[in-house]
Length: 464
Image 1 (cartoon, rainbow, N blue to C red):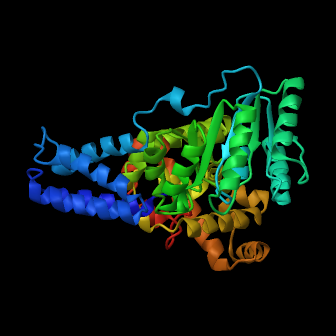
Image 2: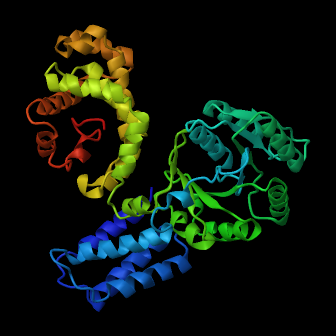
Image 3: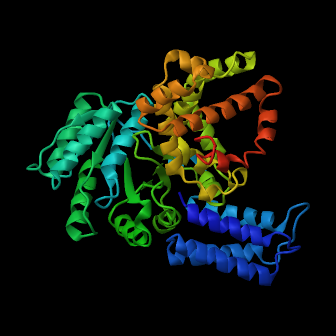
């Protein structure tokens, strides 16, 4: 997510180090780099101009305070303006869905075809059912029969209820019937999926305007693809003019290293970004925090989101049992190794972890091939699955003949088995550090995680 922009900003800050003062000359050079970085990330030109002007106003001639270097002074200025650009300080009331109305609370989804509306409805249904809300979804997209079936499938996966519709019905009739059903069955939230087009047209806008005036939804969310680039501005403006939008959902934020729409759409619509889609999974929807987004862009990471992700997806009871086992000195076996890989996958995998860790914690973070690391994790799990229960508990039993059998069972080479065993031994040695001093010793041994790049499936390295 926004990897290129993060990389460019890190480079900009690097060049500012060693300066005693932010002068007109070095600030002008820095602003040129900032401008180019934003334009390359597909941020809209008017947005770039305003952003750069605000930074220039604050940065020019700013004295270095105390022990701060100009780079640190600059990152503070850029961070403040970046937070303001994508939404200002986090406001829970502005970002959270407003469901304070007589049930059902109706949420209308609007956007172009391919923006990810239907998938987002499924994710939103999952998000709300996790909050113990009774959710009903309905599709008013009568132009794509597959859209109705798609919504039915994702709704079932989300554990919500689906209201059926057919292509021969009128969108307004479908929506009215769904509202009537929701009232009779005590539904808390009704999510209405609407038809999209490949481009903005008058027919589509009139249809969704009619739906809006009929339903009077408490929330009208504009769903936009983060990869839309410069087109995002025109699309956002058209929908904002046609509908009283209450918020924005940015989808596919994990799919492009540019993602400039994230920095443009808030400026154009003036409406808060409420959610971001960060993976294809139904759990891949996160409430939007402007300050955290700014921190990610500037390479500061998003440790708070990482912690929240862990609490939400990791089996804390198992994690506690594992910690007690390691602390007691009972040892770390291949079952534990596999369990840790599974815990990482439940948190979104390597890509999600890398995205949220500060750049300075991982040397060469931008160059880590997360896809290759994910494949390595899957191979590792396959190899461990080919072992007997006894071999997993006592890896020292695995000699040449056993390695050949395990390799055949996993459909891989003996060399791959040897690599996994070496990775396990490295991890086991790390875990031993917990017994005699805890995390501090472990982090010192890892060099503050600077060596993590070499652990990402590199030569003899770990798969995560």
